[in-house]
Amino acid sequence: MRPLFPESWRNETQVNAMVLSADSENDPDVIAVTGAAAAAYCSDLPFATPIAAVRVGLLNGQLVANPTVAEQKTSALNIVIAASEEAIMMVEAGSLEVSEDTVVEALEFGHAQIKKIIAAIKELKSQLKVKKVEVRRSPSTTPFTPISRKPFPPTSRTLSTPRSIPRKRATPLLMR
Image 1 (cartoon, rainbow, N blue to C red):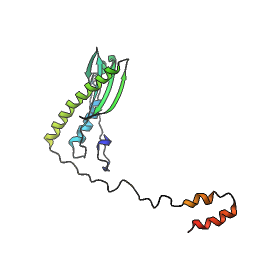
Image 2 (cartoon, one colour):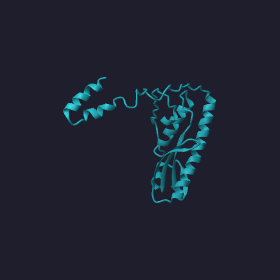
Image 3 (cartoon, helix red, strand yellow):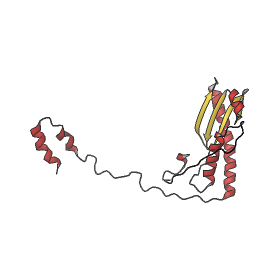
């Protein structure tokens, strides 16, 4: 989520997803990602791009969104996808032997499911009518201005002079 905040946003921001109650059938990990992103998007935080996550499984040759824990054990494919409407941002995958075409289909299927979730998140935000915090751009990305490209060019030559007498004569030149 961090790259989706403005670069000049300097306020420490944390979203903690704590499972208070769960059944043994559904894995709460992808809904935690979706919930965290939805909370940031619907709040006054400068988080302007809604994202969501979905798990895609392959059961009996059919792609399934958010398979249960039991279904995950028999699934030939287990892909977790996080994405915006425009692009897939993160993929974690594990599988038995499946073709590249099947993986591509699973990614497209998962992205289509995410687009539906994001539509619901946008609908929720439109009902809340929250005004976002304005973030000013940083005045400069460079923390300092260099004095010169070669502040002490004779230093290395002077200190690496092999004979002591020429080195002693050259050393006062450094102090100018």
